[in-house]
Amino acid sequence: MPTGLGEVTSIEAYTDWMQGLYTVMTDVSYEIKGFGTDTDRNCVVAYAVFSGTHTGDGGPVPPTGKSTTSDYAYALQFEGDKIAHLTKVWHSGMAMQELGWA
Image 1 (cartoon, one colour):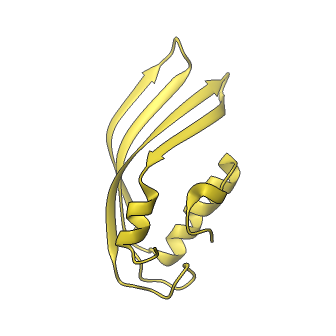
Image 2 (tube, rainbow, N blue to C red):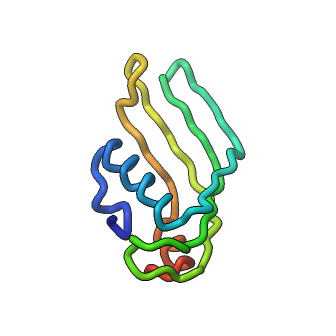
């Protein structure tokens, strides 16, 4: 599991990375705070809060018992009904530090 998102270069790799979090952070949750659709530009933007505690094995370090709660936003650009581009705005470095991973 990469410790940061800098190594992730596709949506498939990103979803695999996120799925991996569920093995090391069994209490992962997301709270959607805002959602918008711009049909003229084929864009969807979502704002949410991510929370979780590092309690499981398989992370970049042994379980720390530390938690993070951090804001993030997705901007998804569509071509037809398929995602053509995804941008995630998230201070992953801060989250990794809070979890004791950095």
